[in-house]
Length: 393
Image 1 (cartoon, rainbow, N blue to C red):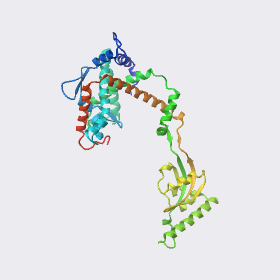
Image 2: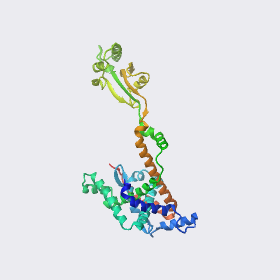
Image 3: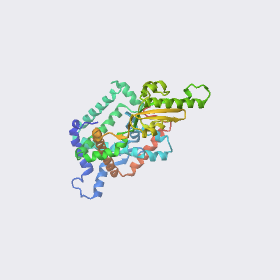
Image 4: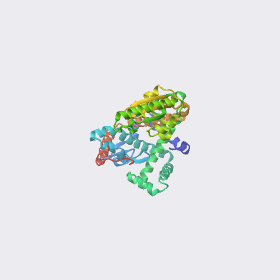
């Protein structure tokens, strides 16, 4: 993340840039919306460069190869856009891929255009110094990336090469991020403070996904398996079942008479937890597989410390002592308030980015851009006709 205090001077420039480019009518403007739209389109100047797969944005060339090689973050790795979309390209026809991948490709193209505009506006105001500031910020991110490989630059560069990205591409990615984060910081700085109502609403919206504490059962179990009991007739299934039932009833009587459940479990249980006195650590009731799922129904009728049994299931006879039963709950609001604040900030950041991209899309309504998007989609599909690429694998 770009720290605001390190780039306050750049944000002032970007403040002017965005106000001038996206929100102001301009000096001498008649105020007519069509006139303002014409002015914005003249500023953007997107046109084809006389060859397929090439656009000119404000005098700067953007190629399809640059777009499909755009570095993207995936599971703490840097991969190209083409690799990120490889699974989708290999999953169906070209038309299906276009429909699925178009929003992501349009987003990358719009982001590239916004970076060019931001850079040009900022450079006009600051001059060559902006290159130095961007280079320093990108170098800082490069050093951070190298630390993932124990400070070995060669290993870091090799990892990038495996993703078809070089050091320059990596640093260009972070230069773009610097400008974008500066814009976001600018937008957020003027936003209203985070209110209690926003935090409460956020908590209610995400608590089931993010803050749910599942129900849990903690119990001790004597698990008697009739097949493992010795009987007078080893071939008699009925004899084993009768012996198991008789043993279970005797053990229930002894437990209710005051004998220690854990000690009896160590002596008589055939279950995997017998060495621990039959103790099962807290488990989610929904996760109990057969034959142990029958214990959930019994636990619902029990209070802490009670004993239930014999509970007969095919191949088992259970005696259960309920140690603890906790219903589904949620992390308290006070405990997760900091996370909620971060979520609200992240949502505002996304809103700022979406607004920027939406404004750009409204202003860049040219057939050349649509043709360029189609060209990039087709190229990505073509380069991914080989066996599937496993990202991060």
